Amino acid sequence: MPTRATRTSTPPRRARLLIATRKGLWTLTSDAARRSWKLSSPAFLGHIVHHAVQDPRDGRTLLAAARTGHLGPTVFRSQDNGRTWKEASAPPAFAPDSGRVVDHTFWLTPGHASQPGAWYAGTSPQGLFRTRDGGVTWEGVAGFNAHPQRKAWCGGDQDGTPDGPKMHSVLVDPRDPAHLYIAMSSGGVFESTDEGRDWHPLNQGVAALFLPQPDPEFGHDPHCVRFAAGNPDRLYQQNHCGIYRLDRPATRWVRIGESMPKSVGDIGLPMVAHPHDPEAAWVFPMDGTDVWPRTSPGGKPAAYRTRDGGKTWKRQSDGMPSSQAWWTVKRQAMTADQFSTAGVYFGTTSGEVWGSRDEGRTWKRLAQHLPEIYALEPA
Image 1: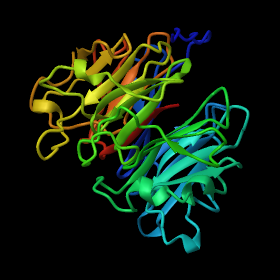
Image 2: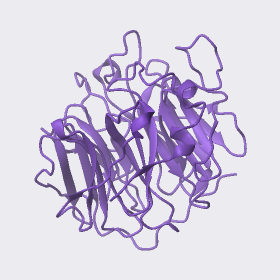
Image 3: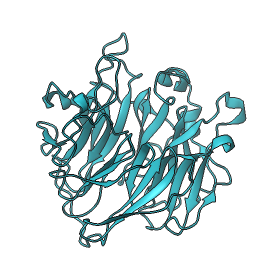
Image 4: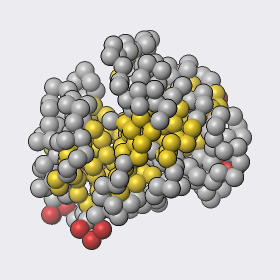
């Protein structure tokens, strides 16, 4: 059974958020009480920033995945917490003879603690890339990119995913650098136990209502997958077709979103695991009915939290607009900090950042008037 993770002995001195948007990258920094927040000036103003992540292994290196207008997709690296940036000399790119071109790098994940300088990147169309020098040069992970089943897994290189098909949710088992998970929209969740040399689908039990086969081996549309805190044998998944949990060594996902209110449903984009409690997680539902308007259901936004592994969910909206708020939250745009009483944060498609310093009980708008927010990560 999952156990509660050990909390950090040294509490953070402040909270800091990296805000990746359609028009640049901002940071938002708090005082120690997380009551007062200050927004920085933008970096990469005018460029699409899909993801920005701090390296937890050194606490100062940042990587940012950007699509820089006519210059195309690239990755930038900062070794001084964002004061200065340098572009990768060889950003993620498919082999010239592959017939594929990276439209944008969508997801960044630091490598295992035993491999300083290692990072993974997921791209659109679906591709997996790795760097071993801290983001200066990237190479394709041939075990996936050249896998004989790759095209079948991905359903070709074009699908109906807004802004193109994507690889995301690259997870590295903290116990074993060779044990990896990836998720693809579309394609599904896949697992490797040999550092990416080979892969197999891991989608049993997940609905794919948009496919003719009710329980296919692959072809699913996971939106976000996360490890439970302190328990990498538990995975939480927000999918196009519901909320799920997987407890290894089982290979069949269990739908835990059916206990959500029927009027809200269990469709959304982000999934956030509690930083200390493997039984706890948050989701942010969106309207997935009819033509999929991708707005807050009924214009009434709310986060939902479980404290029992998905058996029950509680609405958390105190402080949010009670009506006429027609935004939603993208899959990378919700996160939590490492304080003993966790702070939870999300960025909206209308350019607002909201935060809670009491694990979602109450919310406060921390920033507004930003471009559409693509990703929000703690630093």
